[in-house]
Image 1 (cartoon, rainbow, N blue to C red):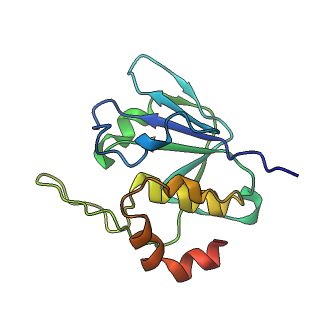
Image 2 (image 1 turned 30 degrees about the vertical axis):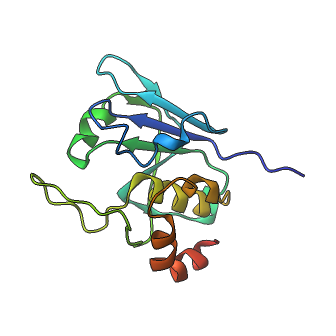
Length: 157
């Protein structure tokens, strides 16, 4: 029996560079839908898991739940969130390490921050629908998998 692809909805900030975005290669993939943020446009994401570093831990009850990801700079999350409708299940990921070489001249990156593609892959494991293909075009794929091997294994990889 063939598994239904994980349902992923991504709200993308148009101020972010598509060229630098780790999620750009997912455009057109089965089960992945992008919506572009606009202050006057509402997006219904109800019933989905929202990846949130301050959320509750994932549980077995989250298996099969669609995922919602807000792809923007940390400081813009509150702005983009104001256009989202529906009740969300806020979930945090385990303390994985990023392989993405982040650097900002203006803001300090959060200690627990992951590249969006890394977070999305980890969430796919935790909802019981692993999608290793999400990392196919991610430049730091091997490094991410290597530095997190033990934790990913525990998560179901």
